[in-house]
Image 1 (cartoon, rainbow, N blue to C red):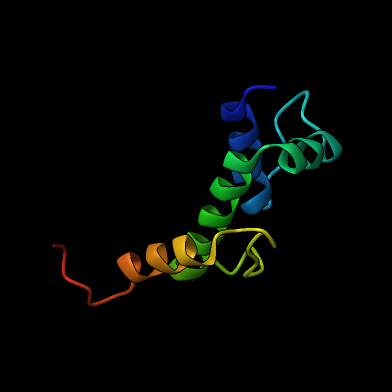
Image 2: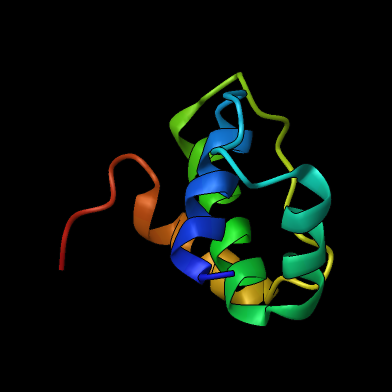
Length: 84
């Protein structure tokens, strides 16, 4: 399955929406288990959701997410930080 389709499904799941046709939670989780890029994308999307204060998703980050990358993303998105 294409990563772009998986990322659309991850976004839907994060927003509490129905998964796209043909994508099951099992297929989504199986893809994440084998695709490091999609796990990173999921971790960043979850971190962004937390930063933006979206209460529809619990503040979770994938267990194997790169902590430095997640922290760097959060640093760039913190309120009051000037664009450089």
